[in-house]
Image (cartoon, rainbow, N blue to C red):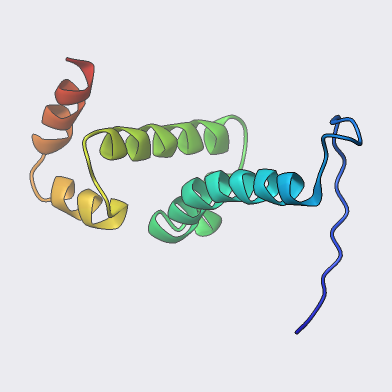
Amino acid sequence: TTTETIHAVTSLPTHQASPALLAALARGRWGIENQLHWVRDVTYDEDHHRARTGNAPQVMASLRNLAITILRLTGAGNIAHALRHHARHPERPLETIKKVSC
């Protein structure tokens, strides 16, 4: 077995900041981060994208987040598979957006 020490800053009072609560909060935060960023890094290969100046990186990240959100709202479990599915027919993305907005 190994022991790992993690330091964190919190605004919780000492009597509320139990180790179990802090661990649950940290895991929850990283779960959200990993769920979105892993998809952006792996599926969209975001680290190798060429948009690096001006507002382009932020705009592209926002568009990717929007696409991921729309696909998840319509029940896509595998974002990469859903992107390939939508890429095969140009009308599919618009049909999917209409489903979300109704």
